[in-house]
Image (cartoon, rainbow, N blue to C red; front, top):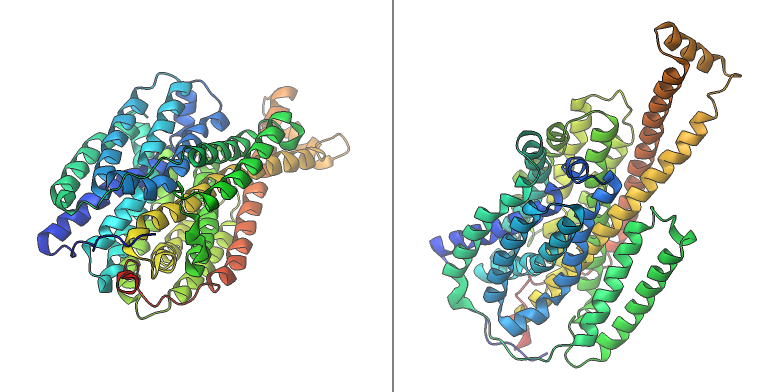
Length: 516
């Protein structure tokens, strides 16, 4: 890759503050959108007349389109320039959010969410890139702390805000609120960064690479989402999608590694810290995001919580994360980031283990305690892993690297959500069948309960219906406990991956000196 023109000097004073705020507002809006719909799913599904499982397409469609668009960031940046691409991305995101709010049916809502996810692709990687260019290399840790606070607060504010809006106004407003935020963010970014535009060059469009990327990522995600509904590999459709995803991926790899102007710069994976950091981020985020989706669903469907209450359970994650993120950012040059990540994974494992002890009788405060502790894990997750992943790269490679690592993270989030939702339902059905075996005339306890219910005025059918609902709740509780227990184990298994990386010697974007 040719060495780019020298990067503009870091911003100073009020320009840096306002630039950070504008970029953070756009990032906040983007990340908020991935989680704000989580607690509103039952309301959206009910309002548009589809099942809650079909309702998860609202999350999946955004995640898939976003995952396809994110790795294109590096290539698009070279064609359009960082600032123009970022501002265009924000403005188109605002338009798509408005259309999502107006959607009259599920088909159109999913279509607009696909568009919204696609145009949102470059926003996160470029917010990282522009923020790093605004701060001197020695302050890269602080820049990433500012960025990560935004990406931490948004997923927590999302369920709270989404729940409150759904309960008190109506679900379309979870999309409409993006309009004023996006317009202000776009105007602020353009005002401060337009004179810091990066040089562009007319590189040919790698149409085959792009087509293969859309093909394999799309096939993989539809397979993961429809698998549960169609009974996985018993369905010819799922087998066809799996074959398409695997073959598409193999051809994509072969093409991109030999193409002169690849749409995705896979040569980044030759950098040890990049691939090990990306792998740890992807698997860790996949586990974390999957359980961010499952927890509010369990609370609302089986514990009788409103959307607002379910959101309040998830909210405290942000408290400790916001307090600790600047500390991590300021000390990242002195403390080995691999230590921070290891501690983060241990705390995540502890939180998941605590949640595996929940029962149907667990009260609000007890459910909330692990969420508060989770803030420690989240603070030690993003900043050190971004530092490891982007360490020592030339500034001209940061957009492509940030795009590719975010692609891995978002794809893992979508995969994690699909797999955990499938396992959650399958294990619930299995445990329900096992528990139902004990409801028979030979069981004294079962007969005693049914007789008591009939004595209270229930008919035999009503009494059986009530017992069946109790069995479903208990079966789901066992399934939820298993998911959390399994996640705790996986977080511990993840720790060695982080130690495959070398300790970063230079902060992200500081590789310029060595590259000239």
